[in-house]
Length: 165
Ligand SMILES: C[S@@+](CC[C@H](N)C(=O)[O-])C[C@H]1O[C@@H](n2cnc3c(N)ncnc32)[C@H](O)[C@@H]1O
Image (cartoon, rainbow, N blue to C red; front, side):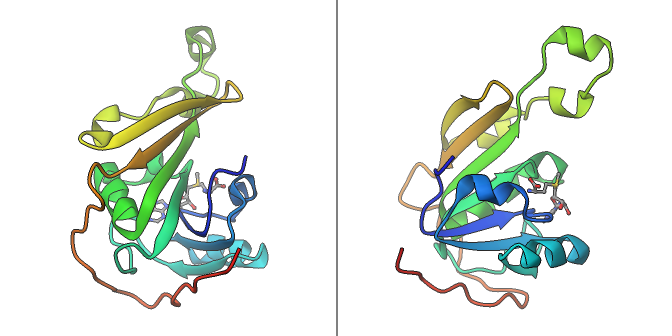
């Protein structure tokens, strides 16, 4: 799956496992867990500790912001989406698809069976795609040119550089 282009930020990158599905030209990752980030760094991502709801980057720093299986564990999901769209041109949210009811009855993979509450995307342009029958990909954009809340930089993340590919 190559849908992420240019400068890519993965929010809640964990150990950096999923990012290979979204081969971007330049991968940057943030997470709350230093241990997770150490593993993601070994996989080649540039990383720093940061909270999804308060990203230490200026408006429009990235082309694409990925939230791969991380949005559902973030406390304020709407704010995480708004932050993603502030620092990036678009956000790609990948989550597990809801499971058929029969699976739920046996208590299997209940983690994957709960869909995202779609009110978090209210007022935003969202395209929803099923991926391989197992996942749901939400491609999210701000309705205007940018959400443009405010330019701000907090924390100590290295500055991502523009790459040529
Ligand atoms: C289920 S893991 C997904 C990891 C990775 N994206 C993947 O697909 O392998 C969720 C990750 O989100 C991180 N996380 C949770 N809340 C966060 C927050 N507020 N800000 C940044 N990262 C967060 C967790 O530390 C964890 O590494």
